[in-house]
Amino acid sequence: MEAHKRVFINTLSQYIKAIITTCLSLYTVRLVLSALGQSDYGIYSLVAGTIALLGFIINALVITTQRHLSFSQGQKDLHVQRKYFSNSLLIHLVIGTLLPLFLILFQDYLCSIFFNIPDTRREATAEVYFLMLGILFLTFLSAPFKAALISHENIVYMSIVEILDGVFKLALAIILLELQTDKLITYTVILQFIYLFEFLAYSCFAMTKYEECRPLKIIADYDKKIVAELANFTKWTTYGMGAVVLRTQGLSILLNRFFGTLINAAYGIALQMYGAVSFVSTSVINAMNPILMKSEGANDHDRMLRIAEKECKYVVAMMATLFIPLIVELDSLLNIWLKDVPDYSAFLCRCLLICFLVDQCTYGLNSANQAMGNIKKYTILMYTPKIAYLGIAYVLLKTGCSIDVIMYTFIAIEAIVALMRIPFLHNSANLNMTQFTFHVFGKIIPLIIFMSCLSLALHQLKYPLSFLVNLVVAAILGLLFIWFFVFTHEERQILKHIIIKK
Image (cartoon, rainbow, N blue to C red; front, side, top):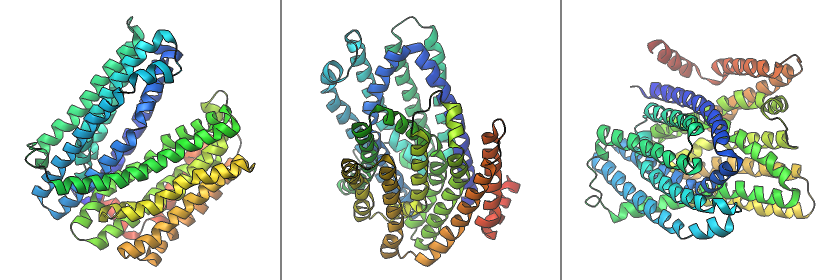
């Protein structure tokens, strides 16, 4: 299949998957909350959320494995691919075993002392904690096989598995309503089997389809140098992802200390909104990154930079058509979504969406840097300011600054980091800054201005549910603008060819 067609199909499958799983998830949460009750659901969320904080380590491992597999595929060296996969699987197996064993040591302290839960549910909480560690182990084992699927650009199969995962969780929620057992423990046990299905779906398919994933001669393929290379890449990827998690959770704590729990409620809603729309970016990135990595592996450096450039343009173009109308119509949307909207919810949502949009303007260069593999200096320069923001925010709050100043500072630091990527890649990868600025900012700035003016104009029209109509109309006109003014003639011809041929 042609590279352009794979990107189109993979992106489309990610969008369809995101819409279906989001709808399934929203309804599933409602049923699970009804079945478990607020107290038991709160216990599950507490335990699952505590362990989920380690999720960025798994994401870092997936990125590391996918990068090295894609790079070696570009080199067309099956032996090296197998070496990278086997050693990556070994790392996942070791960490996935040791980390849950380490966390077991804290089980009694967390479940008996630290967590604020009713005494009658402490034993059940301990069981849920133990079961969640089993899910963590399965997630670690699934990671290298997911990375193999991404590196082979088999996003469609991954989307099918994730949709089935959502369907199974919905079925579990429906069954849970009729059960008479301890529903909290039963829910977690069956959830473990769903994660087992996910692991088998990824691993069996990968071992059957891809030669480097079979046979699993982990010990025979062990290579100290490759393990060290993967570990070093993972270390700095983990630092970057950990910096983002620390900033997100640290800001929540600062807001709580200076403004109280009501601001936390607004910040939590903003994070949910951010998570719900982030698929716009991840769908394009997941579809394009494997090709980008393979190009660098094949020593086609110029093509790699062109793909990174296109990734920046496509992601921001798609985000602008959704985010800008959403930012304008946010008050109406929140009033429909929530019964009682906490103060500052709309403001914090707007700030996080703007930050995301700003960051993605050059995020394709982050992928380019990963492809080249020299990530230590880049990670320190680009992610340390994100951690430093917490110190700046604390000082500002201590001097009596408002939440507005705190969030404007957030946006400013995100913009500085986004712009820093351009000269950094110019020096490390010979990126043509003038060409990048013209091809990316020269295309997306007019789109952003158009979408802003259009959304504000539509916002003036007031009639029942006008915000929904405005969102749809703005998105359609935005897509037309992208077609005629953001895409080049060559890109339009390629897309026409894909659609007609399909």
